[in-house]
Amino acid sequence: MIESVTMENIYTVLKSSLDEANLGKLMTLENEKLHRFVAYAIATCRPESVFICSDAPGNIDYIRKLSIEQGEETPLAIAGHTVHFDGYKDQARDKEHTKYLLPEGMDLGSNINVIDKETGEKEIRTLLTNIMKGKVMIVRFLSLGPTQSDFSISCCQITDSAYVAHSESLLYRPGYEQFKKIGASTDFFRILHSAGELDERKISKNINKRRVYIDLEEELVYSVNTQYAGNTVGLKKLSLRLAIRKAARESWLAEHMFVLGVNGPGRRVTYLTGAYPSMCGKTSTAMLPGEYILGDDLAYLRKRAGKVYGANAESGIFGIIQDISEKGDPVIYKALTTPREVIFSNILVSDGVPYWLGDGREHPERGINHSGEWFEGKKDEGGNVIPLAHKNARYTISQTELQNCDPNLDNPDGVPISGIIYGGRDSDISVPCEEAFNWNHGVITKGASIESETTAATLDREGVLSFNPMSNLDFLSMPIGQYIKMHLDFAKYLDMTPVIFAVNYFQRENGEYLTGMHDKHVWVKWMELRIHGEVDAISTPTGLIPVYDDLKRLFKEVLNQEYSRESYIRQFRCRVPENLAKIERIAALYREVEETPPVLFEILDQQKKRLQEARKKYGDRISPFDY
Ligand code: SPV
Ligand code: MN
Image 1 (tube, rainbow, N blue to C red):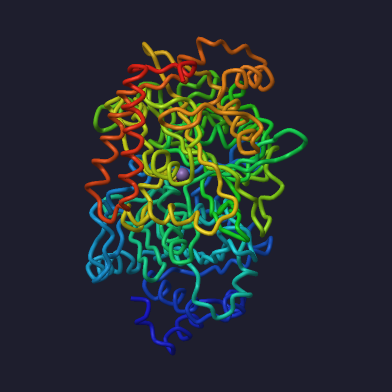
Image 2: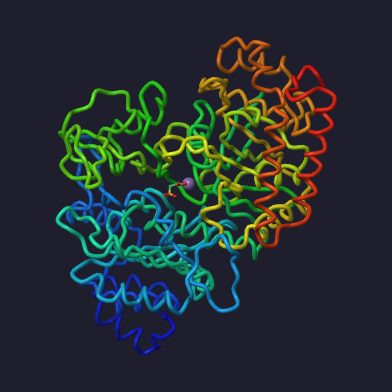
């Protein structure tokens, strides 16, 4: 659709819609594809005015103030803190209305939400027509990954939400200078967003017309009638979908992973990435006290001279605020309760103070939240009691605000990646931590086999296992089988292959957790030593597990706790029937999808045989001391 804007039209539109200063900022970037995109957005959305953000401090400040002036954010009592509310029914990613525009000849497999390209484009063009009437259109230039590096992806986001543009100041690296350098290159992502018509609370009114449509060929995303950042901040999950395909073309990986720097003996720092579905402990692992956080959500992995290097696609955190308390998470709690730039979303505000679920404080009985004026016991249209804050309430903060932010955050070379952790959630299948035998075994039995049990917080039915390969299921932009193959192939021509681990922090017996909240720190320290060959491991049918004496020592060193042989046996024994059932479930899923690499079934089959043989020898439950 954008191609339909003719050359003459581009410049007529731009000259008649931008004032001199803004036109100057745009024209400094000599890029026809960019000019065409901006002209198309103006001609279609018809904003009142256009603001081109050059990243100069005054420009960044203008966006921050505009968001407050327009009522999208409200200042709180502490300096730099603001609150933004999304609509009552606009509190999460809209999976149903997020679709790929499917051109003829493209096949994304059966599990991916698509709409015929022509139909989708027509629908979105109708929705976008005049949608910015009376509003300021903001044009931003940003970089995914550190700027001026192999990792960089230049992005142009257009939005009529100053909240979205402001969030991007905290979450991404500025990219105006990078756009100057790329010149006329056509290699950049484009995102066009409008919150649509707003009500008196400045909330998207036409939620029933919420659409997120993704054009993979054009590396272009449209998002309309929504405000929730996961649907609107185009550099987050929308760009992840584009990046997964770009990575496939260029032989690297774009992943839903944190990047953690773990301190080892002798001032050594070892970097691991981690992919976990939500509610599986991803953030608390990324933020382990005393270690370094390089990223909490999106990582790019590239090969260089036989090694893997990783970078954080982002430079800020859009984090879940529920359960952050002074006692449990002192570092982040401090950051959220002292003066600095923080955007709170969908929390409760009373007298300028933000409150959220699980903050460990006494709560006021009234205030303002995502439902408007709130009081204890308030019910929604469906008769459901509205909690004081939404479960998915969030904070947005620049990562450099955290005490333990890794100094290599913006290093253009990235950091060497020595390990990859896949996290799941089950009560009685997987051990708390284990190492894969090799890359392929790890990719298949750990990454491609992630399952997470639904919790009371996420679904009505508790304990249902949901499958989520590499924790990237929601964002796949290619058939699953192809995506798995891309991971298998990634290890080709590597001299140093990252070690793959799996973790499960949620084993339970009679309703009680078998591991403690802080035990993950021990598992991570054990992985660090394994990577450097400094501790042994025990070979089991499903992978390599820690030796008791090493854990006993680490529990003492890391947590100053005793660790009993009984705990070790209960946690690390192999549960044979449960593991066999899991293999059946996973294999059945992959038999249903297109293009599954045959080696996946071979590796699952080998694991099945190891389990069956071990069962003959030792029974259904195998203590680590049995082998
Ligand atoms: C997630 O849901 O995995 C997030 C938040 O990180 S969102 O931006 O909504 O994707
Ligand atoms: Mn995420």
